[in-house]
Image 1: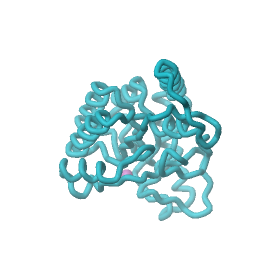
Image 2 (image 1 turned 120 degrees about the horizontal axis):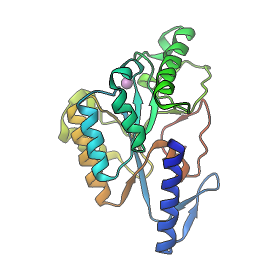
Image 3 (image 1 turned 45 degrees about the horizontal axis):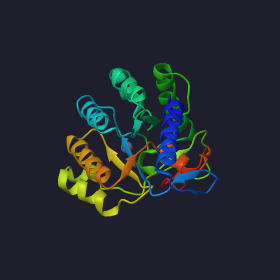
Image 4 (image 1 turned 180 degrees about the vertical axis):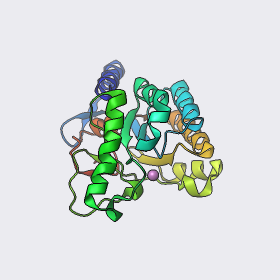
Length: 234
Ligand code: NI
């Protein structure tokens, strides 16, 4: 499903590019970025949560914005319809461990289980696929190997701390730029409000909201298993 939406986005971008007659610029890795376009990725951790995630999906849909959701495994079964909806609406879905364990503070077997159980829950619901990992707190044990790409962030408004729509919105707008990966948590109503305000504001400035996978692709970056990505530039 991710692959399908990715190819649709790319097709749309290429069509827009041809219509505009603008020059494409070469990117690292050989792909091309449409000239003058700005892309950004919103990422949401710690969900899904009934109510807040639902309202976020409604708002993103209204605005034609895509996002990436890193889900807590033990919350998937009770929110299966919401997770299926994320996939149907073209969002990228990833793994945030089964019970939000800091992977560098548990035994290797437990860390592997935290990831595998969540993967199994996602596969049971959505089918096989590659579910990228966002390790809780952005931390992984040194030297550990991972089978999927990992995603950090470069813009963190600490939404969990202030829970203040104005502060979170401004915290993002102060730091965001093309190819930013933004960290938010869709379990707080204030973060949902801030995210939708940011979408409105940045879309007016010409930004496109894409998934992390799309953001990397648009920059010509080929995602590698076990590597941690902080921005769309790789
Ligand atoms: Ni988290």
